[in-house]
Amino acid sequence: MNWNVVRLADVQPSPWRNGGGVTRELAIWPDQGLWAWRMSVAQIDANGSFSRFDGVNRWFAVLSGAGVRLDVNGSVHTLSAFDPPLPFDGSATTGCTLLDGPTQDFNLMVRQGAGRCHMERIHGKFGAALDAPKMIAVYAIETGAAVLFDSEELVLQPHTLAWRTVPPYAPVQMETANALWIEVSQ
Image (cartoon, rainbow, N blue to C red; front, side, top):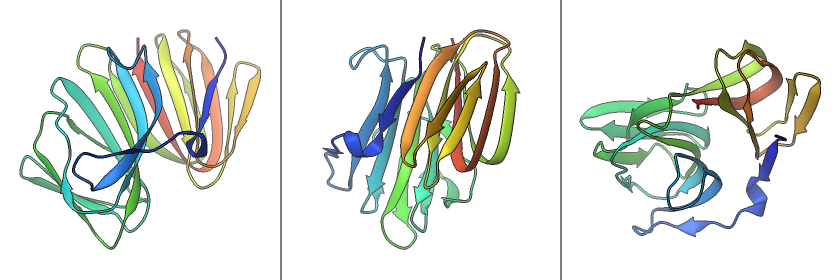
């Protein structure tokens, strides 16, 4: 399987029902209606509540802007573009307060039972030998990223997502000034 590559600029935004922002769905697997996982970038323009996703594990990372304060079932988390991604239960009552204007944020959602997931922010060099078949993804934020899988090299432009499935013990390396690394076990 080859890399799937999606540029943020090529995806049309979908407005939120509450009018507080827009979402661009970058990747959904296996399809729109019965997805096991999905990745998107949201523009949050106003304070408000997040939609509930029962039976879904969520990861949230601020990409740009001053940041947000998330109240997840009474537990408050202040996040900026320098903080690690936050995992939380999609069924939690979640309120969002902007710290100083709009933000752009990355969201990973994985249905419970569809696999374990992990997301982290990478600055510099990163390498992994994966212990099981996994879907891996890289989102290059404001700078590009270079990814090496076996002998395949992929250079990502800023604001671009690349994802693919890899076999167990696949060696993956990445070099970037600022990107997100994502894993979902199969």
